[in-house]
Image (cartoon, rainbow, N blue to C red):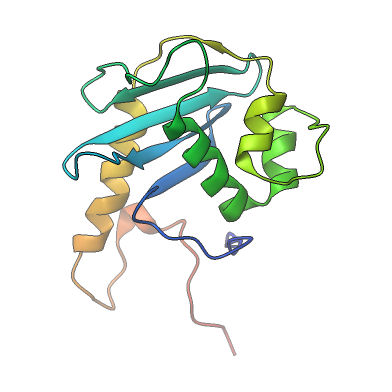
Length: 155
């Protein structure tokens, strides 16, 4: 059985419905501030600190003008809420020299550059997670969720 780690702090899922530390990147899906039907897939690579942000259709974010956009800052802030500042900093391999423990502080500590990457894998994982919300309640097990820990304790 795998132990589920509770979020470091509660977070609202409306702005950033999906955030993860996976595949050597901080990555996730960020809702658009101007269009409710648009989302952005944002990521920061841990080893190189390369960042990218684009729509789910791989159209580059208009806010990428030589520096990380607001979507990346929002993603980093939500990652800090989900995983805790220290864990995200370790994962991204940065040592922030500021006393403020926010995602913005992490971004300012990066030796970052823009490097285009595909949004397809992250967006596909997000859609897969959403599909589980549509599964009707049942007591039978789902083979693809065999790894998910049971909420019942053995007696």
